[in-house]
Length: 88
Image (cartoon, rainbow, N blue to C red; front, top):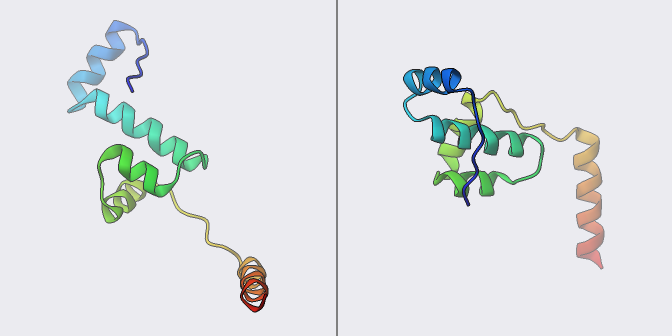
């Protein structure tokens, strides 16, 4: 899939001078934002960028994306649900 958008020539020129590969930076930024919004999974993010799990974790850390850890109550609810399912 190819996605493109227009920038003023002066902005594009500046960014291409400052960044090693503007296309890669833009792709990464869009995919990280989609992950942040919950629209793609960690696996989909890594797959889309050709990264292993630990590399994907590093990318998210560089972009200051932290995963919300579940609260104790949420974990307790999940455990209770799993026990009900296991017990039938």
